[in-house]
Image 1 (cartoon, chains in turn purple, orange):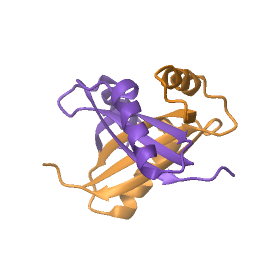
Image 2 (cartoon, helix red, strand yellow):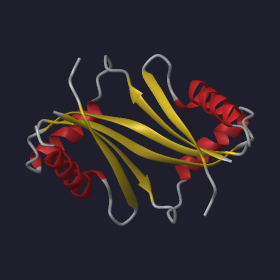
Image 3 (cartoon, one colour):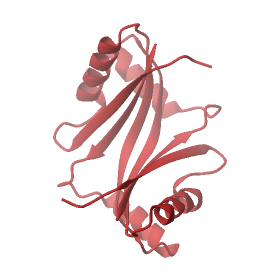
Length: 85
Length: 85
């Protein structure tokens, strides 16, 4: 079994008002060295297959078909061998 | 300047209804090998300091004070040396 960890972010050219709001919150706490905050989605999922290539393929298709909006968002992921505790 | 990449996730013991809903969506697309989908937040930010230890300390404090709910959520982050393109 494999575990995929996926990050979906807005493309750089897309305005991220949620990130801007969080940045304002960070500044009001006094952290003035923090800039350019951008918010994305993180998705973790188990893929029940013994084959790493298949796990990667399934993860990529799930991102393309469901998790990421191809017009506005980019995605990246890692796939790791995983045993449940 | 450093770039921090932060992931905030619900603790394992906390129910994640959004993850369950996404899992149902994934299954209805035919990906029946995917299970235990969990959703988190991803935050990317620049920290304007020349000192890695300070960048890590600022990132940790921002997580503890603003980004993560210490009762329900865990966070992890990486800090990388970064030049804007």
